Amino acid sequence: MVLPIYEMAFTGIRMISLGYIFMGLNSFASMFFTSFNNAKHSTIIAMLRGIGFFMLTLTVLPMVMGIDGVWIAMPVADLLTIFFTAWFLFKMRKVYHYA
Image (cartoon, rainbow, N blue to C red; front, side, top):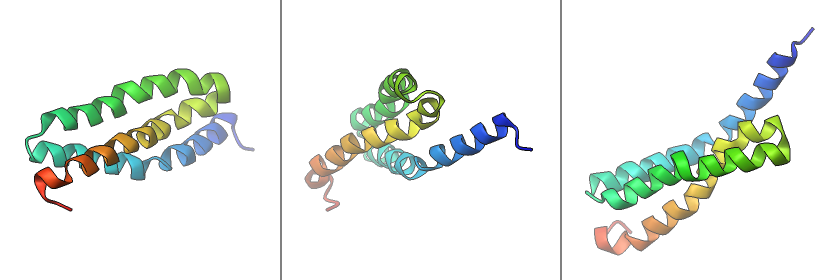
């Protein structure tokens, strides 16, 4: 006999685990810009990931997907932040000479 809570948690953990790679890339980029004393880009990445896109996805996705929307809100927020991260890395590559 499988409990409904177990099924929900098992499904949710699988959904959340998809976002770890995006979370790692965003965290790396935020620390990368911090190490170059560029607090502006570091803060933008951290705020978009932690507050901006997370609040947006946590509000919208459960209305569309139900409980699965709650589980997938953070990975989607991290995925959306990746676009800004990539743009900042591309934009600053000649300033810091890393590419």
